Amino acid sequence: MEHGNSTLGSGFILMGILKDSESPELLCAIITILYMLALTSNGLLLLVITMDTRLHVPMYLLLGQLSLMDLLFTSVVTPKALVDFLRSENTISFGGCALQMFLALTLGGAEDLLLAFMAYDRYVAICHPLNYMILMSTRVCWLMVATSWVLASLNALGHTLYTMHFPFCMSRKISHLLCEIPPLLKLACADTSRYELMVYVTGVTFLLLPLSVIVASYTLILFTVLHMPSNEGRQKALVTCSSHLTVVGMFYGAATFMYILPSSLHSPKQDNIISVFYTIVTPALNPLIYSLRNKEVLGALRRVMGKYMLRTHPTF
Image (cartoon, rainbow, N blue to C red):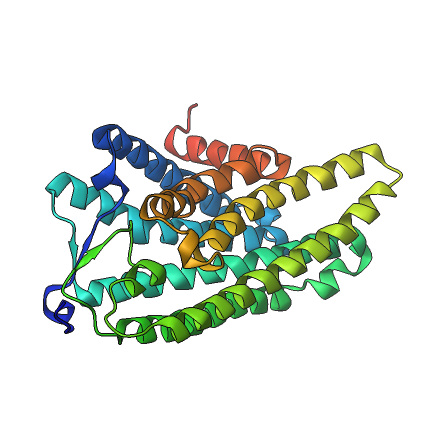
């Protein structure tokens, strides 16, 4: 096989899930609906949290950041996949591939860290309610947000630069929905075994450390909730925590499969399904999981919509 980084000039071909599907038109329609749902639900949740002053508390500030990350994450991948399918053109430039990888890794990493901070927020709110505004002040909250974005960006920049420096073989076909590390390394002509080990180690660090914080937080929360005298308080705490744990399960399950399981256990078809799950399905479901059972969010939504109706229809 000839070696050479010809991809610098010609880019790659993304052989996503739509290309290999038995019913690509139906799948395209489903993905379009999910993307529109993700845009609408995350955008609406962001709008409500921004406009309703009652939601200007740490819990909802972090939730707003999660919605922003989901909104951007799905927009990095989905529109291109849909446009490529409709135009029957699946190419992506070398620079475009690097940019997509950087953005996807940044947003995925930031969400990973943010979910751990959200678990800590719930721990403080339920286990130390009297000290909540001290331990979770606005300054601390914004520091958590900044830490999520900065650490994720630095990690993504390092991985993107190192992955894209490899010489790629003449085959330009990436058997994946987007430019990610595992499928790209399969095209590299050089020995990538050491770097794959580094990806594994950083993946374990980036995923398992925040996950251990989440598990510890919810273990302590569970003990506290079980000793609550009030039935109503116990139910409210469990509803809030169950929503967060559902999101955590979906996100970490998919991320673990992609970045921690050995490459020998991966297949292009499985990887494509998992990538659709965490780039399209999860961002569409997250705001629904958080808002449908949350009375404060639903109340805020009614107030915001009521104000909008009064402005547009004063005589209503």
